[in-house]
Image (cartoon, rainbow, N blue to C red; front, side, top):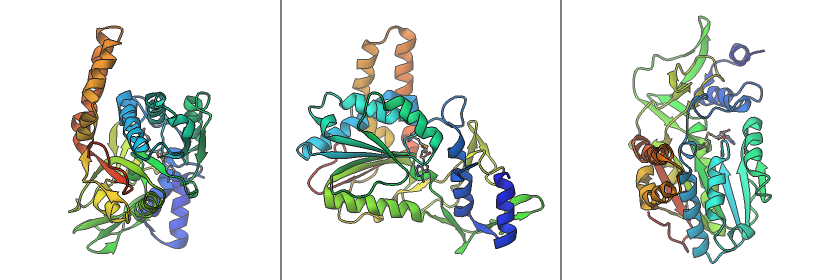
Length: 332
Ligand code: SAH
């Protein structure tokens, strides 16, 4: 039975569902959830992410993490990535850090991925070269070790609740389609309890064991912006309630509420992605790569890719750094 038919039955049996329930089913239903059955990235897919645009993205994140690791005096370390997509960021991260003396020898890499399709792609891209990687469905259990955690476009995929004039918004089945039970007139607010929950856990671990987290996503600081839900299919906006499982559903990340979820660890003032990449020396890396390029076209592609990351995307995407008290977050 299709996901639409199953959700329709669920509503008939149990009543209307919340936005979070709808979003959770549309993205992670084991059979038909958006992420569960296909590779959504790239030109032929639905959207493109920063690590897929330029290798410099993952490289600079790797160097940021290496700096923190050196500040901690090179301990045994857990490197954790939430929602690794195709594994491209981690591949660039690991290539960029392979000459940091001893870092890989001290590292265990943990990839947290719910999608079997994407997990297989990550394994293909990473396993043969890096045997110290393991896969998990959720954040691995706390083992007392310091951690470096990264997440790019992970938090925007977590289910949110919406409220209209303070009342939770519900979705029902009306006239052969999913529809909100309200008319949408008034003030809309959003919450993302699962994001706060994960962030709180990350903050606690960093405070207790040492280390840092780098969270990159499109989002805002309060005051909140109202309705930020969106559906994207083949690089175009798609109606949010049409054909659950077909389009990617996301909501903007409320970075103020993520920051509030952290206690005991330091939260640096937010940077834009553009500021972060430029301060990390992205331009120098563009020049370096250009010198090794094999022709004009390749040089152009390298520069264009980086320009894209610091252009419109560079403003829209923000970088949140959380660090343990004994280290300083580079460039923040
Ligand atoms: N970081 C990657 C992919 C971003 S897309 C990039 O920048 O290209 C979101 C990723 O998070 C996908 O890999 C998706 O399968 C994963 N994901 C989404 N929700 C998840 C959840 N609740 N648990 C684990 N992985 C999740």
